[in-house]
Length: 275
Length: 275
Image (cartoon, rainbow over all chains, first blue to last red; front, side, top):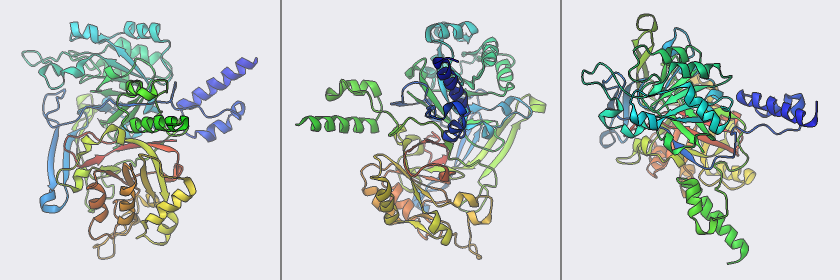
């Protein structure tokens, strides 16, 4: 094995260890080829200099897929009377910027608390379909959109979270965010096409898909086929992501503050992009 | 101004911009003195190689300060019947590993949604009082404990989150985590002493204090004086932090996935240390 090949092998080994970065220094020290190499950083490219908040503020009338209110406040203690304030909240797990764990659409998939930490910090890939979504509210991310991203940016990073930026966040606070038909029977907003989900499942290590709309499936989907296909593959999803227009197509690292509720099928999350 | 003074002025300017790192590259480019300087990284020391989960799993009987159950599950959809699973949760904001926003103990302080993003990513300082806490469940972090940390590790980093590691996380799942007196009238676990809170408020830019117990105040406190002192200063707190024994006293970066609930006084959070 030539010198460069050894280096590449070490890099490859480190990369593979990085995607399972439990152990860190100890793991690196245990790798025969990597004794002298420093542990691989969590961030693919340069050390981040900025954090972007990918989370919408959550409020009681935040729009929901099913249309009804999904967050309720009950003030149990009040400062004027009790010297402190405290609410009890009643909230559907699938409200606001939130996680879909595999358990959401499977009998016994991973709960949100079981998502490995190493799946919650990942290179962020942003697929921009805002132009076609502006023309067609039923636009979907297709394999061609992903291939166009690869043509421009190189291979999908190992262990990436792949996000759809449809520009739909700009419609939050208006009827267009849900975009229900006149008869209320169908919704019209962008999402992933099932063929894109299948394409990404075939990639070695994509951890999650994310959307800036109310559903991984496009709104008019009759069958939740993307939910079923993606979540039953053991991967998770993120819905209602904010501010994707403020992060680069490639190079950011997403940090997913998923709730750690035992047995949960998902839940509101705090999500940052480190850029 | 001498050459070194100019460099120091640029560094100081960058540091100040870093603590308000909105704008990143653009802000740096706009700084007259800093045209040629790269933006300051988010991480003080080396680029992190590992993430440690500082969050306990949350479950319905997770111990609470007041003693009663604070998380309730209501299964609204079931996979066998509905093809998907979904819970509505009822939860007190102050349950599990969670945030205390200034609004928790003030009439009109910042809500949890109003905490600036730049306060949620910070250098992590770990003050280890496990030895004295093992001897005395009423142990508190004092100014001397902080000064001892400084003597060993240097000045507190600008913008730090200062955490008490009392070793109390090891008692989760046992009665000792709450450690109620026989008559049930007092609790006995470690916390910050009010003089330590006051000492940290006098430092230029400490963002938050964190504890591995149920309260910023030690359990036997009769008056929530640390809550009142610290939160009314506009800073936030973190309670029930996990795994502080797995991170170094200095050098880690805490990422606080605080919930972004409008008007919230705090809430369960997902928290990582990047090491």
